[in-house]
Amino acid sequence: MPQTVTCTVLFADLRGSTSLYESLGNAEAASVVTQSVSVVGRIIEGQGGRVIKTLGDGLMAVFKGPLPAIRAAEEVHESIDRVMGASRPASQPVMRVQIAMVHGEMIEVAGDCFGDAVNVSARLLDAAGDNETLLTTQTLEPLPPEMRKRFRRLERLHLRGRVEPVEVWRLEPRRGQDAASTMFGDSAPTAAPEGIRLASEGVSRIHTVRSLPVIIGRSHEANYCVDDSRVSRSHARIEWHSGNFQLTDLSSNGTYVRFGRQSEVVTLRRGACTLHGRGVICMGVSPNVLNAPTISFEILRFDDTDPQPI
Image 1: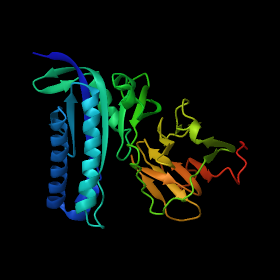
Image 2: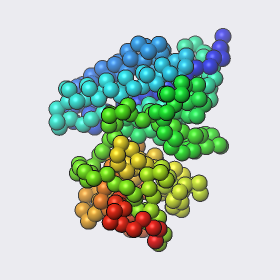
Image 3: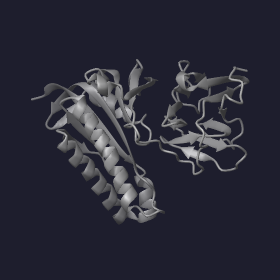
Image 4: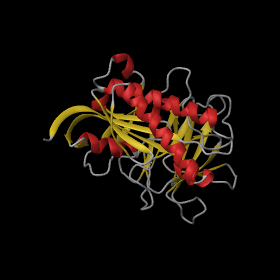
């Protein structure tokens, strides 16, 4: 008999497995992925959760409430980081974990789960960056006040299949822990940046840390609306994360970054990179493509820059 229950639905996904298959071969890569998914499953069960099903290089689980689900998510991130750091050769690609969770009603039938909480959690996973845990407002509200302080509001996302946007929050790392993922090889400047200048179609604005996050996309609700069919409604997010300005791709077609005058282009597909210096952000296609939709950026320090909009 179908049973309606209220619980926290968690989806976890290991990203980077495709590169593992390319570098290690099918047998060895499959072993690494299988073992990693098993580690995630054991952590979830150790926190009182129940694995509903595995999904290739990810899984779906349910918890009685959001607090044990968040504890499991933190332990999963830390465990996968240790595994990748301890046993991975320098030439082997790194796998990252993305986690999304939603607290709400679902229907359980023959060991599987269905309903709005399941659908929203699955769609929210697509918006998570490397090593991020995302959840909704209704998932945040039952948490103790001290735990709620560790979450940062991102934006209202338009999720596939839903008319109304969903308010999303991200779990910040514990104090002293740096969870930022930088996909560009050069190191960021040692002095903390204080602002970022973004320019598009002749309009230039300066954003301080307090005015972030900034959403770039085709939607009129985005901070920078780029009317181009190659651009997703919510295409990319710029935010202050672990002491840097971080760009996260949220799109279907990818986000591309070129730093300064360098010819190399950094490609982000649901990943993130730290912005430094100056350069261009291109949505949907490479900046080498004619008439590509782009936004230029420049990281600022206000001791030698006038922080006024141009």
